[in-house]
Length: 69
Image 1 (cartoon, rainbow, N blue to C red):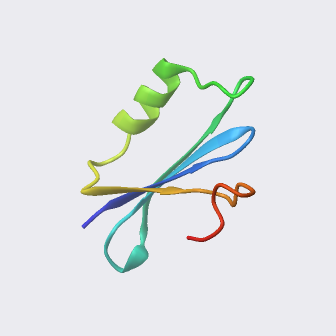
Image 2: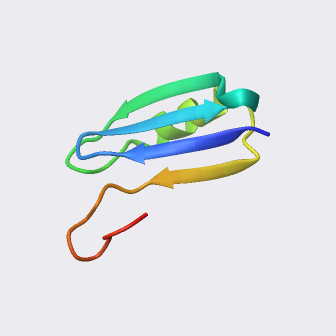
Image 3: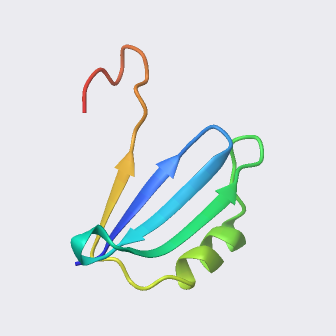
């Protein structure tokens, strides 16, 4: 099973494709421009990776809204 892990930060979007035994099958780091990402750049980054079976998104604690995992 391949899992695409998405980590959206304040200045970048990090994509990691993990395969069996958590091996790294692909990685892309995309810069954000004022909180936005270029759609064409995102599509190209995803097209360059193998297909994922599942997707996970990391959420950094966000004050009162996100207090726990």
